[in-house]
Length: 322
Image (cartoon, rainbow, N blue to C red; front, side, top):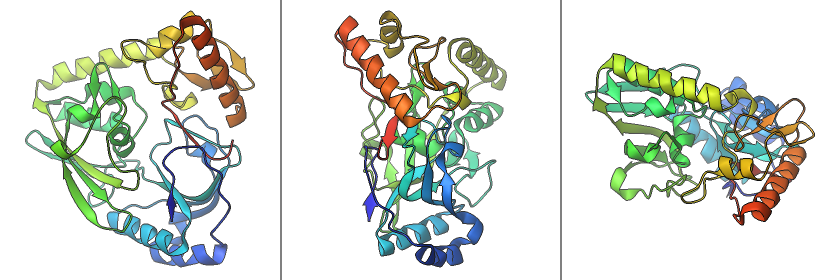
């Protein structure tokens, strides 16, 4: 079995329809899809087909998928809402496990509940929904997440953040599934959160988290959410046309500002264009390919390097043979 950690790879198909039928019998035919277009499962709308797309709803199904993957020895990767990732135009030769729920449901990978200031949430719950839920419960600490298109699992993995907050600020415990199918609970002090990094081993699957928040007036929390929403709307492109921030912010600096200084706003390659609103977003203006996007990324990095001397580091994961 080969887990993909987000680096560029080139893999060959390893799972036949007959082999996949075994998994379909275990978790249901509607939960195992062949040749699924990854462009329809990512916010950037780019990416060819995955050999197989698995849609688990429970930890038990996720465990069955991992057991099967161990047996057939195919590459695999976990996907949430599909933000912060760029798949190859050739797709992914292996299994994509998508953990994303439309609405909270008990006993699934998208459960959501609270007791006091502790919020228990499944890995597949969208961050905007968590922020709204916490506001109604009078719990502050997640307002910043309202405009981020990802889900809890991916946000924890990459320690997503905004407005001076990060996921690491509110995590109390993590529930993870090992590649061998063992369910474990990790305490906050065993994790190594830093900027856009959680310190989690790449083959641990996040199934849920417990957040530790603070009580506050719901009306004040909702007001903060509205302020953040308006700010994001006025300064960033909509979430359904980009992969999120393309580059990490260099220490003490803004990647978007550096890209603006380098004169890259509005620059395009094919269907991929640097957003006129915010330089650290590349938008799909229609028909963008991964080849277009990577060519534009190279151009941005070179111009920023020449103009400022700073080497920009990608925040978005690039997966597949490009």
